[in-house]
Length: 236
Image 1: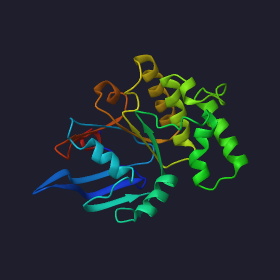
Image 2 (image 1 turned 90 degrees about the vertical axis):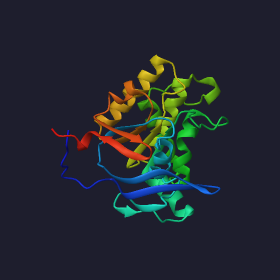
Image 3 (image 1 turned 90 degrees about the horizontal axis):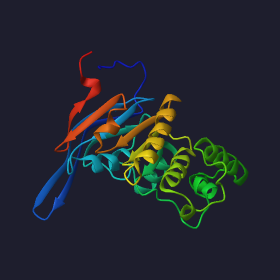
């Protein structure tokens, strides 16, 4: 499934490596990664434990910087930005969905969804409108005033999805997003991902689950910190 897109990539990694020093040893968690991700891509990134998945998530999510190489996000080189500037990029360009939901227990559903909007300076009125709309979109329109401990795991992950969508990010990153859920709740979350991608959202799922990867048109496999397989590099 080779692809020759007529659009510019939303993400491009050029010769990216990430090294960690442990005493006298240097561990190369990522090596010589060249990768282009295009608007509307729906991707699973798989690999064994220690294969580089978590490091790839941290780089793509602007949570860490490459040791070597360049990272272009929406056309801008973000590989050498300060921590403060990286934080601004994350808020505007990226949405995160984590295995453990990372909700604020003291806040209601609608308030949790509003948190990123607050940091982007969106007015209280507009934030509430956006949050209510997104809560309804993920099936929680009747749970707006509930707190996380009053919700099931699947419902909490729906809140996390709505929160990730709140600033209309260029890319959504999901890290083992169904790892804490039963099979039905996990399937419900994946259906939401399918629907979001059908609407044009760019989704990247970090996973160890082969069954989950079967539903994404593009699969990237990491091994020993390198891209060992990419669907787009395969012949038609």
